[in-house]
Image (cartoon, rainbow, N blue to C red):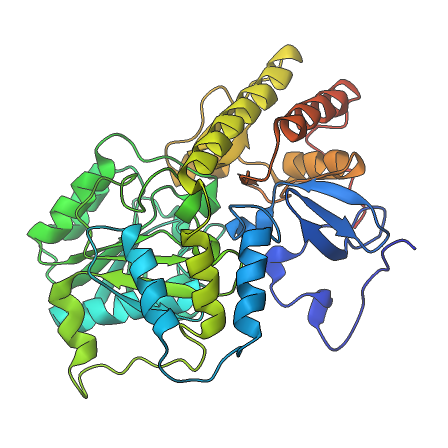
Length: 426
């Protein structure tokens, strides 16, 4: 049977996270029933090559057998018991292997909780109240963490007063002068929090030396540096912090490091350890944080055979896909470029990708990306339909997947389905 139109009072719009909601196609919601490797299957049994990848959570593909077996093994003993266990320690050590400059780990239930914990510890350590982040950056969806995210009015501020809300203040991405202006004469910045790439705004890459400049200005000012690796995670090569090349005080992880299990974690340096170890100083809590289920997922990812080689090969396939999509648009006489890192990227309909959030807003097109989503979905491929788009490639994607994707994209372009007005039924 075909997927039903989901209208239910129990779950608004039929989904608990509106950012995960895909457009209707011919008035029909996409309802996924199963997933394996690079593919997902809807409730009519149709398969799709998936480039949404659980928003980056399945860097090694859906339902990887090594990870699945580890979770089954954990579930045979317990899902959660709310007490200490050796698996949590082992999982912490596994994460530290991916961030050699960090010294300790505190598990959380989500990425948002991890960034919330990091910013709270920064305020406690410094005695200051303000966290600086980039307009268009995403670090969670609760309170001040969501301030200035992509799509908000505040993120696109110009020469007017610098936006502030709930203890957060904005900086302009790839704008050294704006960063300098923030720190000059400001002694209340507790920390800066930033991603390796501005992912939710279209995978905008940092200009050479920009992130190092921000980190240096922060440390000169007495502020801490937090690198949010939740989305990039295992989609980038090497250890978590290699891509940034900065001396970070804390980093947050989630999504892919758990193999698809819902979790997050804060990794930090020893000079912050006393904040959580001293009784009564700062109480961290979470019944399911670091549970046996989470620990099993993290350890399975860490013990995955040939993990680094698989990630390197996935990056090569991603580069092939990026070049192929751009070539198709060039063949049609259309401008095209990509931006991103590792196995995550965005496709731009311009000869050069944006360097700033303002450029991304001007260049991004929800209607074009919706038309790509509709055309490719009809052909058995899933791609994000948002204004800035985003493609996630996993180690489970094959060269056949990439070749077929490029061929399907070419067919859609030749048939005039990729244009500025969406054909998706609403």
